[in-house]
Length: 435
Ligand code: 5U1
Image 1 (cartoon, rainbow, N blue to C red):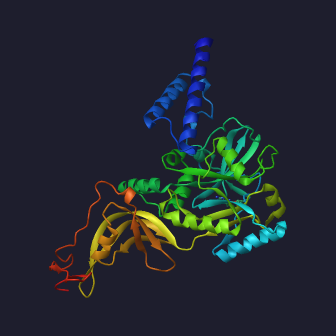
Image 2 (image 1 turned 120 degrees about the horizontal axis):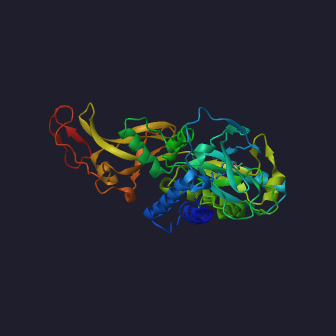
Image 3 (image 1 turned 120 degrees about the vertical axis):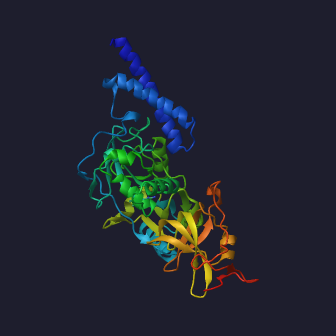
């Protein structure tokens, strides 16, 4: 092929790559797509066709090159250029206040400290290494000093840029973040696995970890994984970086890295408490699972003065939620008959981990309760299990109700003995007549 032909192909390939990266950024970072999925697919197919004709023009950071070749026999171990710290936990407002007090004492300030508050996603921490703006390695946290090299798998995440957008990024940059599986993707994936007779995952966190640690990156590519960047490792001392954590996150976003849109700057204990309360109230409706919130002293200079003890920074704290809620789907409603003949509706759920146990059956107590909560087969529901309390359906997520959700009727006959079921006037409990 002639040189002008090659130059023309290169120009067209460049144009398509720039366009695809732009649309990835709009979709995954800005959450504001400019074109339809079908139009995006056309761009991708055009690029694939050109690259198939011109294999010499394929580069590892091309959007077509997310899924590599053969499965790897095992993950290699990598040492993080800077250790990945862990977080101290607090479970009460008192512990959070004590944290703020220690911060103010060490910094010698009387007034409220400015913090960056962020949801704590229930996923898997990763570290991404960008050299000259190109992704060269991705690793799990491991023990914080070294982790597993999962580059091939991380490359398959469409929301993870293989090269950073034009910017003043440090030439050697470690970006830290959390890989997670959105709830909707988790439910759909588990349903597909169940239909295929395969093992389902207990919760989105296990699903994210299991999907990222696949030896065959083609399997990871089919899993609905997302990620958010939440900090920096090596390269974090670059003088061109802003001097607050919140602004640094904004800078990362500008370079094409997705950052959680719920992150916020807050002031003092009152700000921390309000943020904790707001996220708890919104927790069940968030598109991803969180197990708490993280507070970070916003000024990087203050972070450096505070330093860290053992493996946890003195400038950050995870404020965890106690009661646990999870989202799952109602597969069926069965009726159980007790010794006294009471007929109790029981929701059969897609198995989900709540408060440390897998829940697949939840009593709806009686028919009035079922009607009051308006639980239908096919509904998405929020299940709660606080401490050792028996799990309960908190409510139906009405926005998720499918058109074919099925209303449940009280059976006319006992499911166990076939006798007539009656509901005495004014009683919530239905009774099987023979029991
Ligand atoms: N959002 C968020 N999650 N998270 C987890 N930020 C964040 N920061 C972390 C961890 C372990 O660690 C740094 C504060 C060191």
